[in-house]
Each structure stands twice: as structure tokens, then as C-alpha cells.
Length: 385
Image 1 (tube, rainbow, N blue to C red):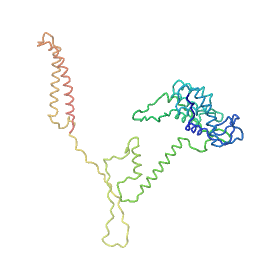
Image 2: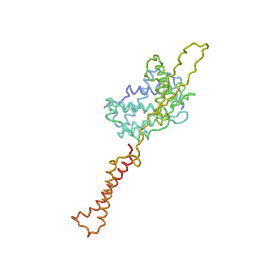
Image 3: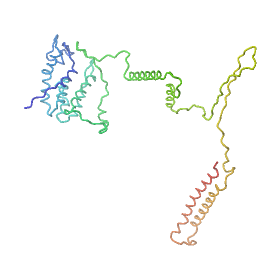
Image 4: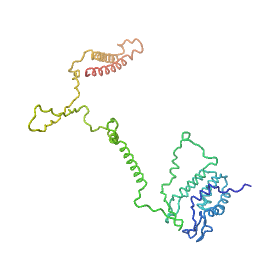
């Protein structure tokens, strides 16, 4: 007969980490007492316990009935990791709730993954008189679920290049959007309440924005300090202000340089020169008037005048004459095709049965030829050099 399974050291450490240690008995809201690592059966007012004794009580007294219950009610074989996770889960929610939960039903039906997902539903608690999602319970369920799904032989490598995870809309819809409350458990007096908000504390978006602003300020400050002109003789290195202006110009919705003046106009400024010294000394020294520098506008050379549009200009005859001849040929073909189609049958002299289609084909081809010839004739006449 196989020996019953017992909680391993990893399972005990998991329970201890979430139960917390109380060296002195603390009164619960329902009037009972708790001491050590969640021990309530023999706790009473004024009772004190050491950490070593509390661990012995947890291992050999509090977990024993839960281990026996799991061995009796769970019909499917369990690994050590699965057993430890179920012991921690049942110890937290209670034996009666575990027997009525869907975790046990799914486990006995062989649905291990669904049973692990069923643990997530037990993440609420009563805080300040309201049933709310508790941050500590969410973390405990996640740890128990991870331990339950851990394979005895170790983790199975599934690289993303081999099997890229795909989005599951069903699982996304099952996720509750209720915000979890962070509790503040006072182990001495047994009171459990939501952690108070710090006055003036930033919310999560505000804290993220503030952190980004501080980091950008620090980076810009370091960049400006690094770009301090230590050796002004070096040229060609852009400064931080130039980079900022360039990035701002690229970020404009209409593109950079939208409001710039016409680049075809080039402004040339003459270098201001001091007046030459006087040839003879003067009795009174006066300050020479500095003339205002002249500004010359250099414009690009004008394009040569156009030779006309063909109607009034000088156009070579050989440019448009072939298209004119083709247009005339097309008009003649249209006339001949229409004449053949309109002529009576008795006046025709068909050489073969297919000659009846000569008229329509000639007219249709001539229309196409005329259209193309007229189009290119118009382009040849209106062409500018």
C-alpha cells in the first residue's frame, strides 16, 4: 500500500510566505484567535509561540487533515507540485469550500488546465465590509497556479520562434476588469483594511508621465553638458539645439520648410568695410558715417522665350505633315467603308464570302487611325521647343 502524500518543503514555504507569522495570538473579527502561521484551532488570548514551533504545528497539525482530505477526494493521480498547490489552495479557502469548488470537479474529470484556471476565481475577500478583489489573493492564486502547472521533469522549452503564442479572445473576455485593493494587515490587533491613499500621491498614469519627464530632462541636461563648447575650433558637429530644431521640423504635419521664402531668390550681402584713412590730418576727428550695406538680389537667369504654340509660331512642316496625311487617309477609309456598307448587294462583286466584312472592318480601322492621327497632329502643332 502506497504511503499518503505529504506536503514538500516547497509547499510549506509557499504557505508560510502568504500566511505570515504571528508570535502572539491575535483576535479575529469573528471572535476567534490566530497565532503562528495561520493556526486557529488551539489559539487563545495571551498565547505566544516561536517560529520553529509554529512551523511544526503547521506541518504536523494544520496541514495533516487537508492532506488526508485531498488524498481521499482527488481521484486522479497527482504530482508533488500539484499536491502542494492544492494543499495551499485548500488551506486558504477552507476544506468545505474546496469540496464544493469546481477545481475538485474539474480535477476528477481529468481537466487539469481548467482546474488550475478555476483557482483564479477565489481572489476576493471582505475588506472594510465590502467584498473586493484583493491584491494578496491574486498573487497567491498566481503562485499556486504556477506551482500546480510546474512539470516534475522541469520546464518544457517552447521558443517563440518555434511556437508563437496567439491571442485567445475567450480568455481575454474572462478576465475581470475590477480593480484589486491592496490590504494592510495588522498582525498584532488582527485588523484587515485597505491601505490608505497617500495624500498628494500620483496615480499610475501620472507617475509614469512624471518618470518619463524626469528621464527626458536628465538626458537633455547630460546632452547639453556634453555639448558645451569646449573647443570652438571644431566645426561640422551639430549642437543639441540644432538637433531639436531639426526633429521639430520633421515632426510638423505639413513637412519642414513650409513657410520658408522662395529658394530661387538668393540674398547676397556685401562685407562691410571700414573707410580708408584720410590723406591729410584734420583738426577735428569725426566718426565716419557707415553706409548701410546694400542688398543685391540675385535671381536665376530667365529661360529663353518660347517659340510659340504652333498656330502663330515657326513650326517645321515635317513635324505635323505625316500626321495630317494619316488623318486624311483615315477620313478616306471611313468614307470608303461607309460606301461599301451602304452599297446594294447587287452592285458588289464579292471575291469571296469574307468580302462582306471588308466595309465594316475598313470603317472601324479608319476611325481608329483618324483618332490617333488627329491626336498626334494636335500635339505636334501645339508643341513648344
